[in-house]
Amino acid sequence: MLKFIAAAIWICVITVGAVFYSFQAAGERGAGQPPKPLLGGLDYVKTDIISVPLVRDSAVQGYFLTNLVYTVDPAQIKKLSVPAPALITDQIYSYLYQNPQIDFTKVAKLDVDAFRKNIRDTVNARVGEQLIHEVLIDQINFLSKDDIRNNTIRRRSGDTTGSVAKPKAE
Image (cartoon, rainbow, N blue to C red; front, top):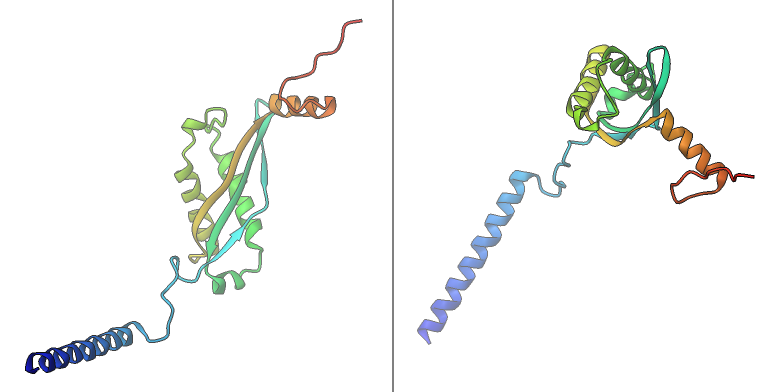
């Protein structure tokens, strides 16, 4: 019987100690506060599809299409007098026209990290503060003139299989 009473007292002491420790640990973290979000309360702003014509040899060779998501501090974006999507669009145009060596027909050579970093850094430099924390790519495509022409022909002929309809010989 003595062993049973000693075991019961031991279980009570361990339970009280565990409860005390859990309340103490919760107090250090901030009782009742939810854990901090991954990117610290930043807003995610999604751009519309941005279409940039690629001009080479005085002719349009195709269109660079992108859809971006960027993270911003809500307090910083409220300070802007110019809409943030306009700044992003301007920087994409500037980046593509300042770097004519970029060849969109060879996707393997496209440095996506440099593209994202350049957009972020130039917008932040232009604003004078850290407005954009991350630029995330939702979509990125390049359509050549031939792709656009083939899609138009397919749409007009009603062919959705991907082959171009040939005119019938009379």
